[in-house]
Image (cartoon, rainbow, N blue to C red; front, side, top):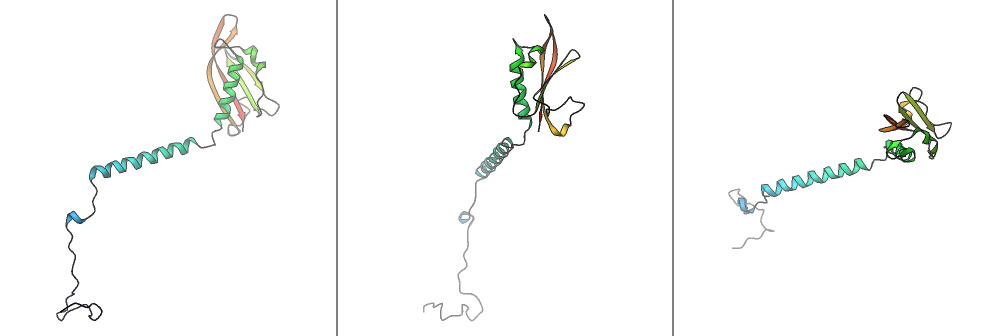
Length: 157
């Protein structure tokens, strides 16, 4: 006697199914070795960390980079032999943006501004409207007399 699925309702007289039940052993199931799973998790974590780092570095909202570039150019223009000369503040070229270069040392302040709309002194300017970069430098205040001072670039946003 042969089994014809089209003519049968799929059950026998006792009410049991004629379909064979598949039994799977543990060897038939998909499994991943623990070391391979751990390596995969570490690789995914590293990839996400690298992506987040690259994304943070690509952010264009860093206004300090403009001020830092202005500070580098100003320091190069007024430094002689590693010592900043305040008399050379006139040599600072005005960049395209409104910029002020400040030099403070021995209780004195020298200022070079790019124009009338350049940021003013610290007590006048708004902190939200400017980007500031500064560094400690050696300043010549008299022939043969050098003191520590602060060179600051202030850029209007």
